Image (cartoon, rainbow, N blue to C red; front, side, top):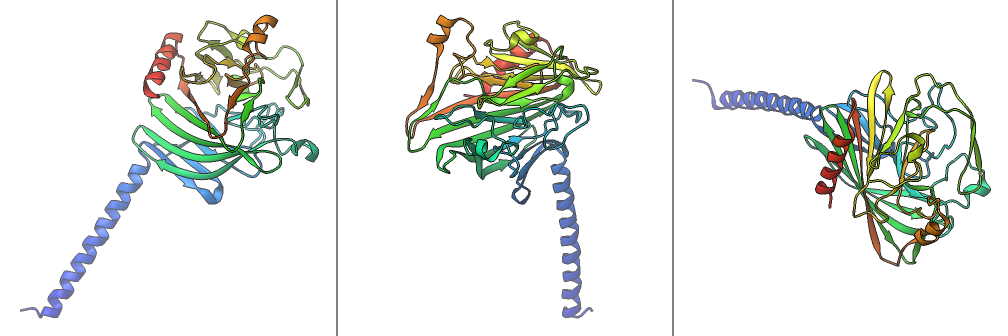
Length: 364
């Protein structure tokens, strides 16, 4: 008959073996779960939060020292094709190198109490940068992974040139994954701090996306664009091989005719590396200034701006009436709701309209 000590030893060995097997099984399950669904992975040391779908990268929320606001960068299709420009973080051959403040998908504005938050970048001269505002990442509030969606909540502050914060921004990102589709909800609550905040009517804002070269519209002639600080940028004619982007608005406007018009949504479609891609940006009826004006440029800036109304009005009488100068009193808040969808393959206006209705139903 085995001794009690031997029996206990055998039991202990069995328990240890069982524990190792269970640990290995749980680890394998955890690894498998991390490859299924939408996974949101914070890495504060690297100043980023990675977003993966079924283990493959979709985008990242980043706030490096080289940028003057946080951004989602890069954005990919379900097949992994990049739809955002690489410059200035990761330049690619054949890209434009204008507007270094156009990075990924971002949210800011060109005139907040007289200060420009849109055009700020590390490429400015010190005397210019000293007059610019900065959106500073403060903290990650929450992350959540899931089968079909993942979420990220962050807190940022809009900081004036004197170092004082003028706005607190609380943003919730919802990352969607579906067959041949990726999506992002950006729900942004802005709260004025200790003084009134005026968003002076300005064309530079609010939700911006800078797209890959292939999604630009073919350029026919050199152009010069002047930003809100008066700095001109020459945009020369480039090789248009593979460049085939086309804008379309909910109101049926096409191409360059979309710029400066209002609509519930706009799509940008084209082939990227042989893949049919459609990027859709959706406005929400509860947003200030709905339906938004579209600051959609052929050279690759895709932006929704509900606050710059006078600047987009072509009729002078209408412009005088439409000047918004949206204002928040101290401690007052407002919320902007947007959805960006990236489709692999062509979609019809009717399908986008259905997505728009779904967005309105989903987000209150």
